[in-house]
Image (cartoon, rainbow over the protein chains, first blue to last red):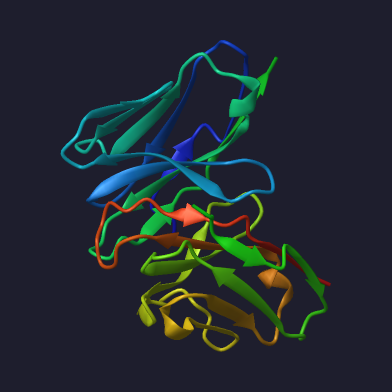
Length: 111
Length: 116
């Protein structure tokens, strides 16, 4: 079963706009990670936020975590066509680093 | 550093045939993962190795799937016999440290398996 569920399933925006996607999960976690997957390629790690953190930034990415609501959000600012990809949240809830992935949000950025 | 290498990139077989996938993780990475990704879904963990020992294979269909990681380096995942529902992308990933949370995983580009 998949722990994280992303919302929306798909998102279409224009270059320069911001893209926001959300992830909800069910159990307590050690940390939550976001990954990007371009069509036909493997997943690429974007950012990790630990359970005792509330917000984290990396370049144009901003991630928030609300453990009381068991939810996280990923914001991509000033989107570019190259940001077109599927984005997955993954929860790390055990002691071995096992990740459980959601179904992903498909983002299309048009020039 | 070189990334995670997987081969083949594509494989087409008929149901009931067997198939094998190979993965070479990033040099020095202790942990290796095999995932199955069905179209439109997120990756599902099949098996996790730390060095050459199995940490988690709870979602591996052991009647048809097997995996090994000899000498704690590269790994092979086998399906025998294949079923139509095995059509998916098989992703290999690795992470640096064994037995620790908070490790980013590094993925290969996967093997796309089609069952006819």
